[in-house]
Length: 172
Length: 463
Image (cartoon, rainbow over all chains, first blue to last red; front, side):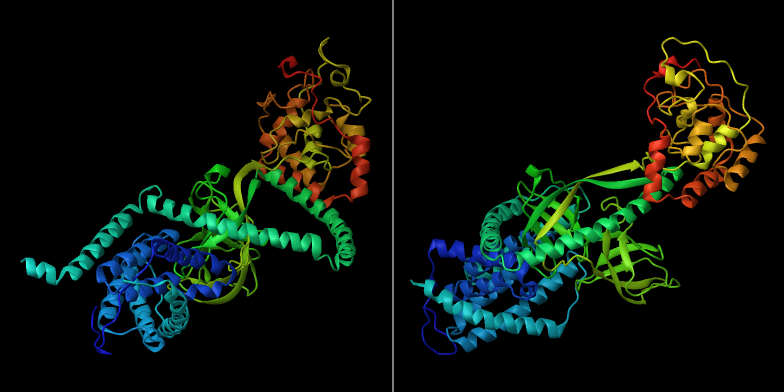
């Protein structure tokens, strides 16, 4: 078990059952595609990103985190009409970063989760913006207020979502 | 070396995974200019997600249907009464609009305009979206098995929605008009200025390519121009919400879409668009060119050739009992050409009695000789060469002009008068003499010239 910098204590590494590993990201994708049909405002949320961060922090394994993030991102790309890989790259970076951070920090309390999610949302958007502009030549508008408000909204939703998903954790 | 790999194992894997994805992205970007097929991962993802979405939509719509149609019927009677009153009002409106539509069709026919008709649509239900702010697209529950193809227009009763971008077996991806990669040919309804409608990164719809020295009114209706070959012409797009100077010499016109793109539930996919010339009026009033054609100096009358195969009502120059006779000679011209006579022109009572029914030169006191028509007649008479029997449309209903010497002058008038004079003559009459509905009906009963003189087969023509 890794020892965190913050608490100085050992933190547990969790694992998840196969249905949860497959079902939760799939549900996140479905809700992400379905809910904006009724609530257009919901597009500011990124459920697949929150799921990526949660699994990465819980598993504390960078390889698993980046692979998990990459797969979820690629699936999310497939739902759009844009080239596949933009979300994939962004979520791979986030998955790697979140799991690497999870090894070093104790991220079990709500405050830490809020800050981590907020930070990784911004990182995710920055990477997405760079890839979309630099590689795919998409015209995107970057607005700091919009991004920060979205990050805050996602962080709050994330804290609530993580509390629910904690129930599916299995001790190694 | 081994220790280095082990030490940076995670980082190396990260770089490797990112590299693979960038590589894949680069391949896709390179291929977007070609006619690439749908990626397998898209098919898998859509196939995995869409059944759940369909199930949710089905449950929701079934519940709503059950509630609205079996339980929640409060106020239905009052609404029914209100709708009936509305229907009555709309019927009155329809009568007036029919008159206008007939006039428009008549003019289009005269000018050889081509119209686009939405011949077939498929209703589809919106089952999901891309879920991304950067990709403004929706999924519908119809795919290849329903006959959906890429680049089909998607509309609602309010206005256009977008076009089909990708088609799967039972679902399709529709690119909305507010996506930045979409483009729609548009025209302003009043000023008739044309431009290109595009989505912006912020999700607004902007009309581009309108010169900055043009005047655009706020609230002006924007329609499709048909120039993109996807949306038929004349479909509502939205209204102008803001006009500001744009880049270079163009205006930046923001358009508020007529359809609520944020809350789409059902849409129509246009699966078939017909393009055809407006049909000539079946029972419209007489056109000046018909009268002109019969008043032109022409070759002398020939005695009708004895043709035993010919029905009586088509052979004789005299008025037939049904009002049908060789007077319908004007029908041999191509209706799509300006100045030509419609095959099924219907005459007013006097015209039929004096002109059409005789099938020969009309006396100079022809009933519908408008000033324009007279001018055209004069021009025709002065034409240096008259093409006799220039009718090339032998298959048309006009072909059976057997033994009718005057028929040649009809074509002459249509082809030699000159489009301007002939068009003026033909257009003026119906515009100025638009009958009221009862009048038109009376005219039809009294004077209808048979639109299809099928009693005389074309091969009987002695030409």
